[in-house]
Amino acid sequence: MKVARAYNILTNLIQQGFDAVGLRYHGIYIVLKTLSSKETRLVKYHASEDDTFSMRVYELAYATFMINGDNFLEDRSSNIKNLVEVYKKATPAFLDVLQGALNELQANAAEATEYLEGYSYTDKSRGYWTSTKGSGLLLESTTGIQGTSSLGINTTQAAWVIRNDIMDGEVKQDRDFGNSLFVASASNPEGVKKTTQSVKNSREMLDTDRAELAMYGNAENRRRIVALSQGKDGKNVWTADIGTADSMVAQLDREMQGYRDRHDLFIEKHEKAQTDKIRAAQAEDARKAKELRDKIKNQEVFQGHRAVTKEEMDAHIRGEIDLKQVDVVGGEAQGMFKRGKRVLSARRP
Image (cartoon, rainbow, N blue to C red):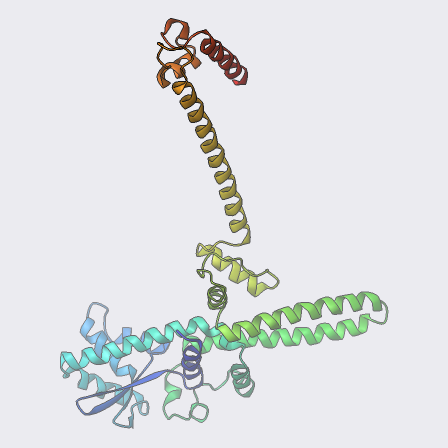
């Protein structure tokens, strides 16, 4: 999902309490919305899980926002009953169309919540938080839609409120810490100066990290996009330095998903280099041994004597036979074999 689309969905989920999609079926224009946690629980109270048809009907009833321009969020309890009766009498084909649209709507909303961290750091999000402070998110005066107060807060709104509360707490802590440093500067100006610079550097790193997250949506998407822009596969890349709590959490999350970090890639590169070195040495030894065997095999010191075979030479080196008993090349060659055998024996551990 593109970051812009995810942010549009998150804006709808937070500022009006739901995301919506419209569809036309045989001249009827229906707008469906995402279900809140409260509505999902209510569906389970109305129908048992083994009664799939009733579950489907109640889900569609609670998900219906408008029909031909009429708002069904108003007078909620009465409209839910009416919608249930209508959907019970509807054709299976009509219900299939609605259910398919609702499933896609819910899936898109769930995927968009993966970008909530980055969205929370955007100016748009922080500006809306400043104006509401997370209170009255579902009031008609806030959403501009009649009937939203009966929907119940959704999980995205709850997570968004928590994130902004944490950021507000950070601002307060920075302010209090600054006041403490001001008091301490009277007795230890040099120490306060160093501490102030260290805190400033940490805050700049955190602000930079969050600005990037606001751009990419989340840490994983940032890592993937940066890796692809560098011509890498998006998985096995050198990760960023761990300088903040957020980046440490992102690094641990990558490791849990099986992605390799700096250390993993370095060890793998070193092991591969060592393996290649060993294989190259083995190939060189095999080549030299073959050259020696070919040289001895093709060498005829005395006419009328056959060349030693590979099997005879290997057996002689192992000490299993004596080439003097074999009708091979003459004494000069036998002396060569004896010298070779002494050399090989001296090399054995």
